[in-house]
Image (cartoon, rainbow, N blue to C red; front, side, top):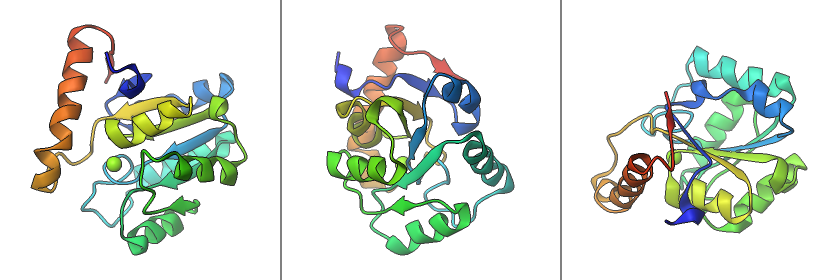
Length: 173
Ligand SMILES: [Mg+2]
């Protein structure tokens, strides 16, 4: 059901991902969502653990781009500076255009690129459409603006529950 929406993998957080293994498998680019994937949506700081992970990922040889739907260019630029990574805000995911721009920045192909994010209908759907390897993470902050909580998230939560119950998806904690 809804194959185009289903992530290839589902993990508890970005810290559960074995980036070394993925590099060895041939992946070279990573399109990272920002809010609730790398930092809680209401947080302005980057903790040391996250900073180290980003540095480790870069040192492995990955090209990385932050792709965010956040309308605040100020916030996106702020984290772009902190992580020393190129970042695109107001990306209108799942629209393909911004994913293609990210690929262009990294110089990678869809086949060698990972998409990592906490939203099925934006991050995962957008990545799957272009044939990229998609990894869903649990959102860092469950509290969201109520309108989001009661609309799109409900559909996403329903899909995740269904995939898990049918064993079509396994959560890696
Ligand atoms: Mg997000």
